[in-house]
Structures are given as structure tokens and as C-alpha cells.
Amino acid sequence: MARRFLRRRTLVIGAIIVALSVGIVFASIPFLPRSHISIQTSVSHIVHAGGQSYPGVYALKIPGVLNNQNLAVDVNVINGTANFCVMEDSTFEPWALSGNQTNGPGSTFPFNKCIAQEQTAQSTLQFTSTSQGTWDIVALNTSPTPVTVNFNPAQ
Image (cartoon, rainbow, N blue to C red; front, side, top):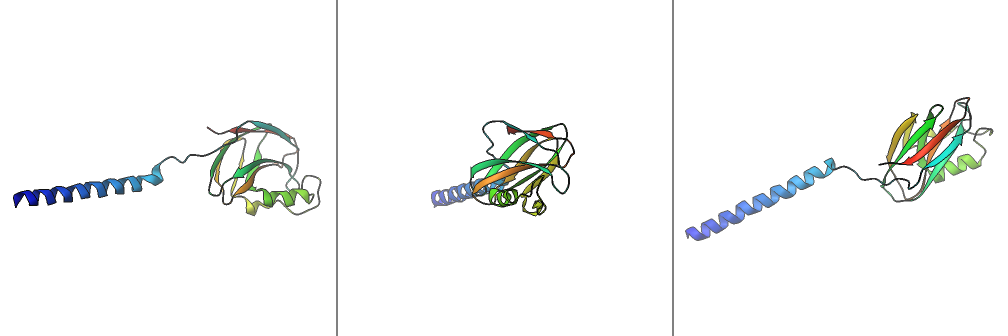
């Protein structure tokens, strides 16, 4: 009789330990560092001078992005700052092709479609895609002087 009681008690204590361990693992998942992908090689591009209505524009395309994928890209602007906007290529391309850039008479830039936006001279842009496909990191220059934008792999 005593042996049966010890066996049940051991099983109950073991089950409690396993349940607590599983709970601790699941509770700690949100605190784990998120891994991200980045571009493979550095890209440098001059972004022409512009103004508020018609900024200088350059878009770095990142093809093959998966839905809900974490991405990060280091940016460095030489000779000023740039406003960076991360958006789907399917949003940027129609705007760019309709002549809405520096010398075009069109609509303003669709900032409301940016999933990440930052004006900076140097930063790491981090974002999570909201759909699968090609994404653009758009650099906009509203300064009267050209700037050079360097896109580098994020660590």
C-alpha cells in the first residue's frame, strides 16, 4: 500500500515539474531575440536634390520576401539626411512610373503606405513584412543638395 502511494506521489510531482517547465518555455518565447534577414551586399546610390513637393527618390528593391518575415538594413547618408520609407513594390512602382518623382507633376508620395518610416543620417531600419513579394526601401531627399545613401547588410 505504501509503495503504491509513493508511486502516485512521484508521478504527480513529475507531472507538475513537466507542466511548469513547459509553461516557462512558452512564457519566455516573446523575450527571445528575433532573427532577421538582410541584404547580402552593400549598395550605394546618389539621391538627387528635391523639395517637399517633389523629393529626390531612390528605391532599393528586396525581392523574394516572405509574409511576416523580419528584415533589417543598415543605412548611412552622406551629406545630409534622408527620409526612409519601407513599402511594397506594388505601391511604389505605380507612383514612380506615373512621373511623380523630382520632375513630375503628380500626386504626393504615399507615406500612408509605409510600414516603417524614419528620417535619419544613420540607422538600422527594422521591419516585418505584411505580405509576400518584393519590398522597397525608399530614400527620399527633400534637401536642395544631393545626398549619397549607403545600404549595408545589418548584423
